[in-house]
Length: 360
Image 1 (cartoon, rainbow, N blue to C red):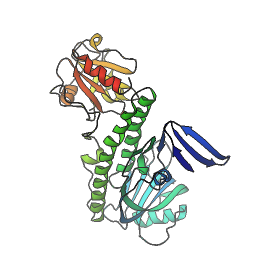
Image 2 (tube, rainbow, N blue to C red):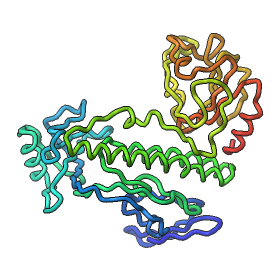
Image 3 (cartoon, rainbow, N blue to C red):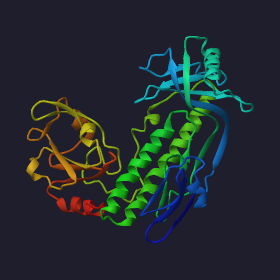
Image 4 (cartoon, rainbow, N blue to C red):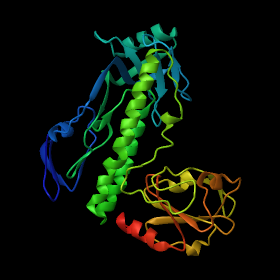
């Protein structure tokens, strides 16, 4: 494989079973893992450290465990711990377990059955097939840059975590969603500078999650790992992003914060939630205690009003509690579920300027 770029796009040379091909595109997103070829080709440093822990991970067809929950055994022991997690959308389980730093490990079905039996004391857990398995050394590393011209790093190509706390996949998916809507906006006509906000927003989050994962790993070594609210990534804030706007009201939420959820009722009494309204790749505009006709209309923005005269009713006061809006306030929610800006419905120019800046 080879990668090069110019002012107009990126050319990637790839080889598959049918031969070698040249693919040209406007942008390239590298999600090729901790040993990323693209990151090496760009000469982007990946500083960090090896954490002195080795583990196995395997996707397997397994019998003997309920798929309704994650199963953990001997959490307080780095020598005997094993976890078996049902993989959503499949019939498989994923097996994870620490192993000695040195020596070979048997990753066959028989070898994994023997390991699970030794660590759990159960002989009824049976593995019929191993679809994928690996032994790896845990690392904590963060790329110095997420963008080089038209090429971007995301997921484990940009940051690699120990699995403690479960931060790696969550952080990687948020990378992809954050970058995805911005690439779509630039392709639709937004200024290329919008893409600089990807690194501004996501790299500090990864740095924080790396620190948390390492801290939890140290606690796990002592048999005292506890997952708190930080591991849920529900309170993230894009403090240093160029997209963060000054507060327009005294509401509880502000530009750059993750938009909270709240249960609501539709006009005909059907139950829904804000997260259901946000779901997808669109922007969402919420107005509080105003007529729907007062909201600015835009074909790429789904608009709703909450209140006595609105499309949605705040039964129970959960929306008011979460957002703290005043009558006439509007909130613009980005496709990735973060607050773009807050404004007053009678001052539409700021909202129009923001939408224009993001390609709408």
